[in-house]
Image 1 (cartoon, one colour):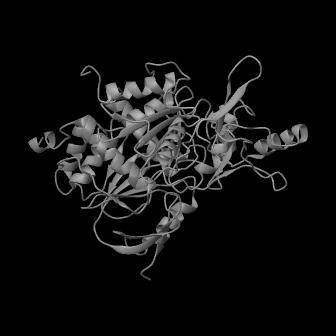
Image 2 (cartoon, rainbow over the protein chains, first blue to last red; image 1 turned 90 degrees about the vertical axis):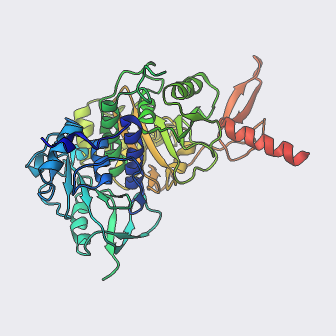
Image 3 (cartoon, helix red, strand yellow; image 1 turned 135 degrees about the horizontal axis):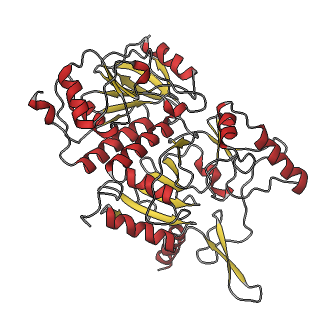
Length: 191
Length: 281
C-alpha cells in the first residue's frame, strides 16, 4: 500500500465535514449555483480536492461506491481507507458513484415506494455550456454555465421523467460543487 | 465541553442524517426514513428537529429557536442552550440575524431571506396516518399519489361543519406530487411555505422521518373550488404592539372571562414596539 493512501484526510473531521456538507446542501437546494468547498482534502490524482472532501463527508461503510475506470488503484485504496466505503464494480449496487463522464446508465434510480434509495452521482468536470434551469430551488428560471455537453439535456430529461424516482447529480469542478437534483428541468440554451 | 463530539452527535450519525437530508431536498415533500437516535430530551420535545440542526450547524451559524413563535419558553430556551453548549454556536432571538431557525409550530412573521434554513420539529410526519394507520398502506398511497382518502376527509368536514375544520397541520400538496404534513403550524402559516426563499427542513425523531422543501418550491394547501383555503383572521390587533395581519395568541387575564390577544411571534412584537417607541421620541 502506498503511504499516500494514509494521507489527505480531513484535519478536523467534525468541522471540515460540516462545512463541506453545507456546500452540498446549498448546491442541491439552489440547482445550478456554484458552492465553494473550503475544507482541505488531498486525495491521489486524478481525484480533485473538492471531490475528495465530498467523499469524506458522505461516504462510510454503509455506502458502496462505484468509481469510474479513470480513477485508478490509488484513488480506490484512498477512498476505502479514508471512508470505509466498499468499492463496487456493480453500478446497480452503488449508493454513490464518482464519474468523469456524464454516463448515467445502470445506476439505481430507487423505487416508487422508496425513491430516496437511488444513487447520488459525483461528476468531476470542468467547462461551461450555457443551460437554463427551472424547478424547486430555482426562482423562475436560472441561467447557468455547466460543465456538461449540450446533449446532456436529453439524458437529464429522461431522468426527470421518472420522478419521484431518479438520480441526483453533484458536479464538482475547480470552483466548487454544483447540484442537480432529479427535480431540475434542464434546457440547453446554446442550440 | 470537550467530552462531547462537536454538535453532540457522533460523525457516523451525522453522515447518515446528512445523506437523508440530501435525498429529502431532492424529492420535495417525500418522507425519508432515517435511523433516529435517542437524544438527551424526551420524544415530543423536538428530538427530530434537534438531530437535523445538529447535523447542519457549524461554528459560523447563528441559531434561533422558537416554540409557538416565542423565543423564551422552556423548550426554546433549553434547545438554544443545548446548542450553545455542545456546538459552540452563536444564538439570537432576532429572525433577521439567524442563519438557522429551529421552530416548533410557527413560521416567523418577519419574511425569511435566501440562505436561511428553517428546521421544523415534527410530531407526526405522515399526513395520512390518522386516516390509515398502516405504514405499509400509506407508503403505497404515496408511491401511487393516491390521495383520495384525504380529499374525502376534507369533504366530510364540509358535510359535517360546513367548512374544512382543520386549523393546524393543514395538509399541503408539494410540487403537484406529494401530500405533506406541514407540522402542527397554524394554517395561517401555510401560505408562507409556498415559494419561500429559505430552505425548509423537517425532522420527526420518534417517527424517524426527514423531509424538506427547497427554496421556491410550490406548496399548495388542499381545498375545493367551492370551499377555497382560507387562513385565520383576527378581529382585533395585537394588544401589545398593535400589529394586524399576524397570528395572535389568546391570553386569559382573569377568571371572569377577561382575555387579550397578543402576537405569537415575540421577536416580531418586540421589534414593532421598539420601532413605535423610537418613532414616538
